[in-house]
Amino acid sequence: MPRLGALLGHFLLAKKVEGRSPRTPEWYQEALEAFERFCSCRGFNPDPTQVTPLHIWMWLAHIQESGVSKSTINSRFRALRAFFNWCIAEGIIDRSPMSDIRAPSVGSIVIPVFHPEHVKALFYLCPPNTWWGARDRAIILTLLHTGMRLSELTGLQLSDLNFTSDCIRVRGKGDKERTICLAPEAQQAILRYLRHRSDGTTHLWLPRQGTRLTSNAVQQLIRDLGQKVGLKGVRCSAHTFRHTFAINFLKAGGSLRHLQKIMKHTSMKPLEAYLRAVNADDAMQVHRQIKPFKG
Image 1 (cartoon, one colour):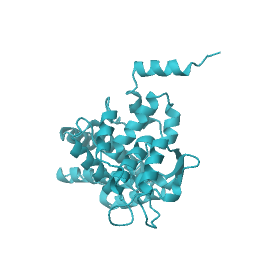
Image 2: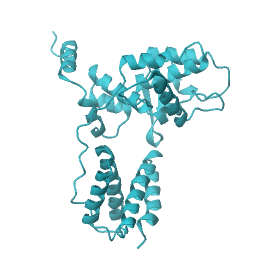
Image 3: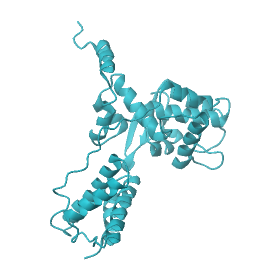
Image 4: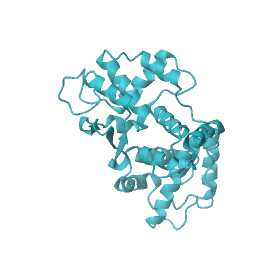
């Protein structure tokens, strides 16, 4: 039987064929290669036919002792479990060594988000009278008002904008398209940015040189802005804007089902962490506004 490393390529190819996003196979690969290194260092055979529940328990204890977060442990566990389930489907093994092992709890996670003073501080470094300041301000407002992923943001084309219907077309995981409402503040910021442009490029976001702003470049510019203004207690990243949108959407009275459609989550499970950020005062305020039995 081939070893784990030899099977990894077949497994990743299968996930790619399923239409997973490019990041998903990378996530599987990182977790599986880490498990293979663990087995090799301890003299275990990582062949799927040789892995036992004891090996899984020892591996879990090892990554817990390494000091990583509970959510990281949980994600690695799920990646390895997906691989063994694939091995069962392919007839490589009859039973998964993880079938009787429960996934490690992620615990109660408090998601740090941007507060209004954080956003105002970031805007201070984005003067709208310069093309780069107008661009960065438009990027921040687009992320803040739509909750889209970083890869979705950098994949936007000028043709995706529809100011007549106040919406924007987004290509998400698996190249699936959806339409998101674009708030007036974000529209105005984008239009101000576009007035600084005189090129014929079809991409919405442009770097100082080149034809397209990459995800790494956007992540770096957001990180740099956060460092310059000295933001504390929150990670300055594109994904934090996604968290900020989700929590404020729920606090404003939005439903979890609608949030799932907007953010394009295939499962409700990832959204449950956002519910913990909605407290009794938020619920009371929304209740006053909704008045379900008025009249």
